[in-house]
Image (cartoon, rainbow, N blue to C red; front, side, top):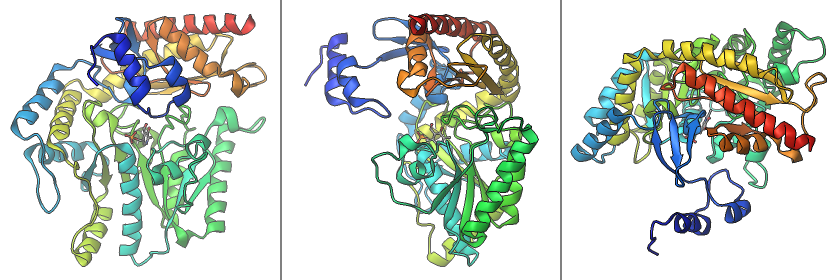
Amino acid sequence: MSLSNMNADLEAADKRFHFHSQTDAARHEEAGPLMIARGEGAHVVDLDGRRYIDAVASLWCASLGFSDARLAAAGASALETLPVYHTFNHRSNPYVAELAATLMPLTPMPEGRVFFTDGGSEAVDSMVKMAWYYHTAHGEPSRRKIVARNGAFHGSTVMAARISGLPAMHRSFNLPDCNVVHTGRPHFYRDAQDGESEAAFVARLVASFEALIATEGADTIAAFIAEPVMGAGGVIVPPAGYLPAMAQVARRNGILVLSDEIICGFGRTGNWFGCQTLGFRPDMMSIAKGLSSGYAPIGGVVVSGEVYQALAQEAARNGVFSHGFTYSGHPVSAAISLEALRIYKEMELPAVAARLGARLATGLQLITRHPLVGNVRSTGFIGGVELMADRDSRTPFAPELKVGAMVERQTRAHGLIVRNLGDVIALCPPYVVTEDEVDGIFEKLARALDDVDAELRA
Ligand SMILES: Cc1ncc(COP(=O)(O)O)c(C=O)c1O
């Protein structure tokens, strides 16, 4: 089929031939796509020429916006020099070697190593396999279970989906058990008991993790996995002390601590990595998204020196470390990521995210007065707005009303793109926005909330 490049033809082609990620397929056949044609700074422009500020940076990834010439040039240069090569069997390329050397000193595990994947889900899967391999290396192959949190999102491959604690990720897929157990999420606003203080809430979650370890048996548990700030689960910023205490309990029980930094990494929380902001030390962390500013598919697992030594010794016993992907360390993705890290360092990234984050926090405090808003939260340059039918009694909207989706649709009418996670509106703008543009995001969001409020009343 050849397309005339007419907008209608392209939309028809997408409806007819393209099976979309995380989309209502039947509705798509009728409604069709929002076709994004190009990008400019923090803005994108659709096929009909409508311009939007993208307050969620594509899918939490376009940290440098949508038109960075240096990233494009780095990719083009690698494409012309070495468009593809693999990293199996001791092969490497200059881009990936320099990327690893630039990345590792920024991590909390500079003595460790980085293993590259094609994206986030593969990084999470790899991290779990590495945890199993690690325990085998230490003579404890019975440590197979993974403890994750309710509401977590860790990706869409079989293991990453199974670890995710979102019912929609499991429904109808009939996923195997995979030795995954879930524990409570640190959502103080929604899950605290009446009159419970944050400290008491944290103590209750930690005690319930300890009880779960006792029930399951510490010697059956390989790892505890957590995002520092839960992104797709509703931008849940944990109370102070929660993650350090959970990590301490895990470590005391010989359980590895895995930090899923796929959203939180690369400055998002105001430090290079979310575990630094939330105050815990992981044994491994998964990275993706901001690593290349989303300009090329790439992810990775950063492992501590201690984990690396165990994996390397076990691999030596087996001959090789029999894990990896055709595109692990892909030269084009690596070149773009290397350039992204250079730009992040030049712009003094964690500080920029902290400065923009202060403006985001101000905007959130203003929007919290809106009658549809129950709770706002943020850390660094990531935030969430939780909608409520009745804010005083904390009564959520009936899920079938899909109020979050109504708001998302309405924001687009005002030239703003956000992501609704149920009835939470997520904000994770590119770092290239100005402070005035941050204010503009809240002005547009407030207008969209007014529209939806009027629609609900009608
Ligand atoms: C925390 C977290 N982990 C894992 C993933 C999966 O990454 P990918 O979609 O690149 O496979 C995501 C994606 O949004 C994520 O937010």
